[in-house]
Structure formats: structure tokens, C-alpha cells
Length: 435
Ligand code: PMP
Image (cartoon, rainbow, N blue to C red):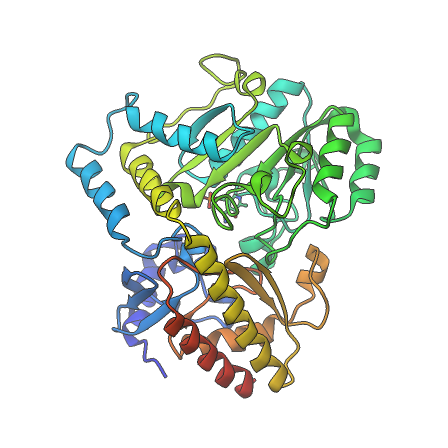
């Protein structure tokens, strides 16, 4: 059992200065029994160490970005190089072109790209661009999808907001919330009805094509094709929020994922990116069809800017991270380990009579404490949060770090070893037995 005395002290101190003691609510332990979150101090590969010296195998991967593990030498070298040459010029650099080229090559629907500083910004701007392009105001989103913390998308938001019981945030004016229409994921009829009713007012249909924010949820066969077709018929743009899923399952986006053979039929107009493409430094990006992107200033009338946007450190770290991900076999390795890990988890749960549904997509998966499939937000909400909280604590005390939310995924990284998987399965066996 880990002692976390220093974390507890720091939490008391942090609360005096930082609201809730954390700089992102998804880091708090409020949903897993409360108390002090763990204060980390150092990370290397698949591990990080807290301020009390405890070591953890990390399946959080910082909510996604750290796919090459902590302090990967190739990424670190790029960051050091960037720091040495000055971190910010407020001018154009060649590096930005190189990362944009890499993204375009991997995601063919992006003719033009713009870098920003977070997934939130990327999504927020795609909405503005879609509105500018269509001259319409409404957005359709899917219940339980999370698209960052801008006003419009904090309606029926999964991930952090749902974890804390505030899927519809306070502080979002009713007039803004009324521009958002929420429909269930994986239900073409629901989308069809919404488009029949509001179609000529809808600027865009915003979706996580592979959901990462109420568990990992694949679209049903033909769902994305149907979504794109219905949206087009209504004259609405399709925006893919791939902040979490791009470069997570394979080197590319949902649009080029082998699970979806009909690439052209699922091509979005705009895509929002973040997380992995910054190699662990702050970044976001959005891009899409040239004709749509040309609405953005300085070419067009839709304004978006950023002092830090495209900064050399984030861009060089992102390039280095993507270079590591181009190494043959890395995605296969993460997938193989995820398969072995979920086999072990499922066996341990079964042996102890704990109902569990595991949704795995390549090297990422979500564990739901329930006895039914999870294909939409309702089914995800229905999973047992208290049981998850107990499991989370039991794993934490054995040095296995999971996201403190029943909705978040476990992420494998290129740094996890077979021995890490074995250790995790052993910990899970004892956790399920205790539950
Ligand atoms: N979209 C999706 C799909 C996300 O998962 C997230 C973050 N979890 C965001 C947007 C927001 O990104 P950021 O936290 O970088 O603002």
C-alpha cells in the first residue's frame, strides 16, 4: 500500500492558491472518493513517480498525448533544441510547414491547416469557420462527446464535465445553449429527425468519429457514412473532433483507419486535432477543405489568432513524436499489449463475478462496470461509478495509475513492456478479488 503523505500536504497547500487544488478538474479525485490527488514529480517511459517516491505504471498518458512514454529521448532532444534557439518569435517558422505537411499527408481531408494551442481552441474555431462558411448558426453534437471547454460544446458534455456531474456547465448563456442540438451517438434516426426539424439552420454536425470521452466507443458499421450523407443533404458541414483519436490507433485519423474502408464516404469538411500532435507540449490544430479554410483570416472574414500558436517547441516536439510513431511495428505492439491486458482484466473480473464491459480500439480501451454493451452515452452513464472508484483506489495503491473517471480510457504507449502488462494484470486480480 502506497503512502502519499507529501501529496496530501501539497494538496492542502494547493487548495489555498489554486481553485480546487488542480488546474484541470479532470485531475481531481472528486469522482473516485475524493481527497488528495497524487502529485507527480518525474516521468520516464511508461512510469511516473510521485512526490512521496512511489512509482506508478502510467495508463493515463496525460489523457492521451504521451503516446511515446514520458521523456522520450527523441522528443526531449527536439524540445531542448527548440529551447536553445529561443522559444517564441511571433513570426513564421519553417517548422510549422513541416508539421503541417506531416498532418496533411496522414489526414487527406486537410488541404489547409492552422495551428492553435489546445484542442478546445481547435474545436471552437472549426465552429466559427463552419458558421462563416454556411451563414448558419446551429450545431449538432452528440450526447456524451467532449469537445473542450468553449461555451457551445459544454452541453451534454462527457468526460470531465460528466464525471463531475455537470454535463451542462453553468455560465453558458441559454441563448448560446439553444444553438446546440444534442442527439444520441450511434443513432442515425435521431440525427435524421434533428436535421429534418432544423436542417436549414445547422452550420455543422460535430462528432468524435471514434468516441474517446464516454469510454472508447466505435461507430456502428455505416454510421459515419450515414452521418456524412445526412449532413451533406442538409447543407451542414461535418466536423470531426479527432483531438483524442488522431494518431492514437494508427498513424492517421479515423478517416484513414482500416476499420472504415469507405474513406471517401466518411470524409469530413473540417478536423480538429490536439494532444499527440504536440508530443506532450501544448498544441491544437484544425484544418480541412481549402474552400472552407479560406474563410479564415488573413484570407477571409473569420478571425482566429494566437500569440503562442505554432510555437517552435510544440511544433518540434510534435514532429519528433510523429517521427517515433512512424517506426514500424509501434502500433502493432501497443495493440498486442492492450489485447493481452484486457484478456487478463476480463478473466480476473469473471473469476470474481464482477460484471465488466471492455471496449478496446487498437492500443486503447475503456472498462465499464456493467453487464451490457456500451455504444452510447446513456449506456456509459449507467455503469457503476462507485465500483470503478474502488477499483481505481485498489489499483492506485498497487502502483497502477488510471484516469480518475469511469469514462476515461486506458492508453498503452510505445514504452510499456510485457512485464508492465503482467504486473498490471496481477494487480487487477487482487483488486477484483477485493471488490
Ligand atoms: N476534443 C476532444 C475529443 C478531447 O478529448 C479533448 C480533451 N480531452 C478536447 C477536445 C479538448 O482539448 P484540450 O484539453 O487540449 O483543450
